[in-house]
Image (cartoon, rainbow, N blue to C red; front, side, top):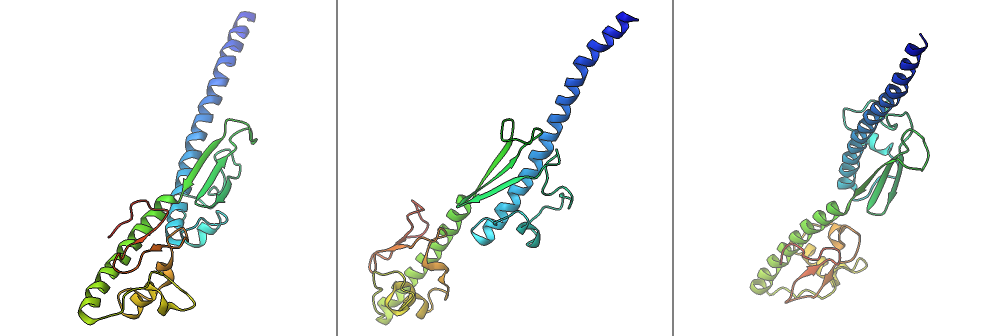
Length: 208
């Protein structure tokens, strides 16, 4: 009997850690799946607002949370702990403190970048702007319109800016969206006849 008990103890000492490791892997996989779902929701929010939300709860009101999430677990990992969320400029970070609930490894970390969205939005806007510039230049030669000033946008006096004249003559929609790139930085513009608007954040902008 002593031998049997000893064997059972040895088997248990091997089996229990293996079971724990299996459960830990399952919880890690489930947590990463949820974090990837939250990443998709954050990217969808960023695409609409060009910024990440201040808190994860903001995603609920806008309908960004994926249907596979349940109300009880959307903000908690597979160990039952809250996700740590921190937006910072064009990135946002998600973290699960895993089983030990401390900052010590192993933790699960995910960084979400809004840069691709900002780049795509800026390139699309630049293409729209350059089509407007080409249309204005064609009309300017045919209708003797005034040359566009080298200043791209002047909110105080739109008529003294190229964007303001494009809006006045119907070449560009009346929106301040085209005053800056998606990062909020002013466009650079050389004026007629160069007619090229560039963004310091997009090395190779669309359009010409």
